[in-house]
Length: 317
Length: 290
Image (tube, rainbow over the protein chains, first blue to last red):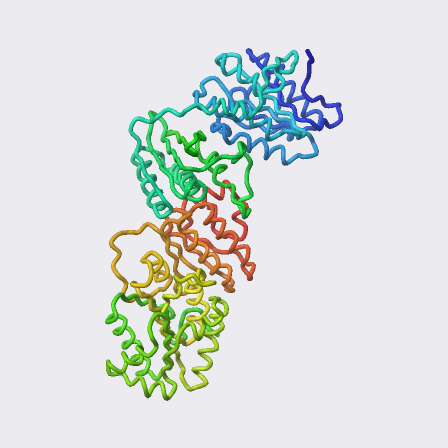
């Protein structure tokens, strides 16, 4: 078995991509594994992004210190609340330092994530391997061993290298990212009694109005109302443009979430669609899915033989 | 120097009028009223027909007591067709049209007419003709670029029998004065755009999404073409706009010849939210993201 340590400071710039998973149990583990990584990378002149859940963030800040301007701390509970927007954040960070081999700590799954969030976060972990393939970047992903066994098992499939503070090894269970994504495509649970709206191009304005009024009545806060409208607008507009000229919008609420789902005859050919911040002025578009990820708390996309399903969640908090 | 307030021959808003009709009688009544008022003021009157036989224009006037024949002989009334005049190139070009109006007013003045009155049948605007998609841009631009600058009165004749109601409504909304408009049974939930009265700029009203992209494109083209230093885009009557609409507007602001920022008024929450996601769209805009 080969052992690895994450990129060391003294080495020449390593041109390859590293994506290890670090399993930790205690705070001490965390500091030995993650804290040491951040300190070493920063000391080696590499810009570091630390995107971990709030309580861990605090731990690392205290251990690493905040004086180093090349370490950026982000609370993953906010920035990565929707797992579908994390990859864009990581790519934007790495894009800023093409010559300095940036390092990232990304902890997208924590105890308390819902099953649907974990599935999308697992998909995100798999997509990291596609998005960063061949780029000089290290992304260390800490996993709390208190997470369910099946979640930890997926980490072995999404990380080419796995380990603990004492060392890393190749993951024999590492799987092709596309395979992992397909495995994440679990059938979506059917809602009990959704509002159903069929639409074509001429109905789009009315559909926006209806979805807006429905969300207001369902209790969506005014500061999320705009997010809701923009997301519904992009999803329904995509159906008309790319999904066969028409679609079906279904709206329903759960105890704490509003859900808008759009079904059409579209296809999704690029697993990485919406995972990189687009140039809004580009004539080639590509803004819709990225915006949905930024605006929503969770986005689930499925591609059954009938076409495309986009399910967008906004929390009622 | 024209001051943009529309003082040339009266308020510009009253001199560029959308006239809607759906019967021959309504058409005739508008025609007679317009021509008679022009003759009473000693103005030259020109009629640009599209769907109507030009001979029917003079016959109708004569039949309703207007001495059209002698007016034609002395050059005070000119009845022709759009095809023979401004559409001769088989394409419609707003920039060329605006130049034509300047020359037409100069010609009328050369013949001793201080004010020119024009009726144009607009039914060609929904035919498949190169440039016809720029008709809305043209209707928007001429308020500031023609009617605030020139002693011209124009009634744009929109025949409801020949145009889809939604297309007609959007075009008619681009006029600050409408005559013969059918009452709208309900808010059609679409997007409309009109020039601002008294200052260079436009107002978008309603909801802007993929379905209304042509309206936004026309408004953006009109914004980009405006040579005024300070141009305002009033969004206070806009419920919603999407990123494609915002991007069109941002592109237009960057293309403006004056290089001065486009002033946004009353930006809806959606615009400010998109500014958070795409701050670069704010370049060339003033009043966004606040």
